[in-house]
Length: 127
Image (tube, rainbow, N blue to C red; front, side, top):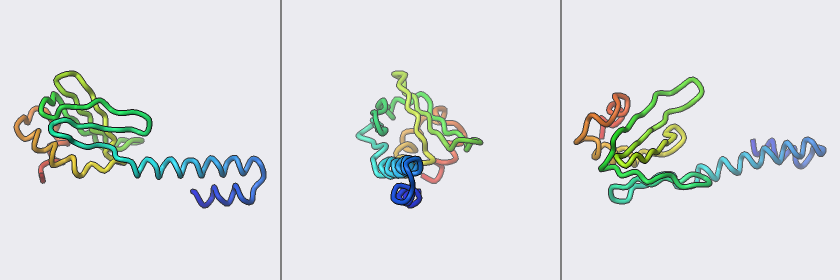
């Protein structure tokens, strides 16, 4: 996509250059999204960061519900976490690297099986 955008900017007219610039911008934003840190755990608190904003910190030792969705027709997997303070966190686990989060989440959910849904319990079974 970046190659198409670069060629359009270099060889095209005004309209094609605008389209090419848009394509290059999409590529830059996509790479920036992949390179940034999304989620991390400090003690019992899960933090998340988006492109423009910070997510609400979730206390893993006070989880009220943890739900993993299946792949939808037009969406990937989502992880919905809610703690006892009614803080919500929605993570796109299809496009986010959360492999390091799963063992930590498994440790916190092991003692309270009623918190997680069946799909999440199956995902965390190997940890």
